[in-house]
Amino acid sequence: MQVQPYLFFEGRCEEAVAFYREHLGAQVVMTMRFRDNRDAGKGGDAPEGCSLPAGCEDKIMHTAFTVGDSMLMASDGMCSGKSNFQGISLSLTASDEQQAEKYFDALGNGGQVQMPMTQTFFAKRFGMVQDRFGVSWMVLGGVQNKPA
Image (tube, rainbow, N blue to C red):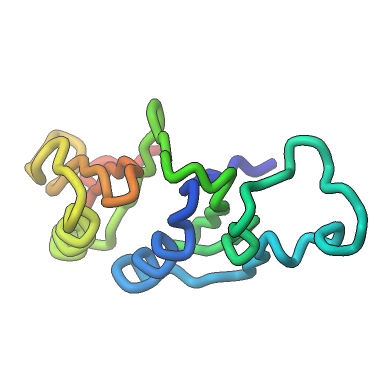
């Protein structure tokens, strides 16, 4: 069994994935746009709940990408322009303290630092940041007691 994060960027998915590619080394596995919906434009009605505002045909219906060994999935959702990622954070464990600082700084560029990078009892570097897309991240480097 796997549990994978699925992020709804409400119209900014392509921009977010490009940002993660540049700053976290994300690799896109696949992308499907709303215009690729097999029912779109063929006289068939989209399944209930799958309709979207006019002009969103080029937005991302589904994408899958990796960050390190982790698979994430994402969409533009209903293209509302109002992402809401409350109650969840993604945890990014870097290979060392310097890499953690680099990731933290990149994610914080245009975002908001929630807890500055500091040393903790569980990691040499730990900080919390919300990126420019509203996704909260917990960044760790130099983990001192790796979970069992």
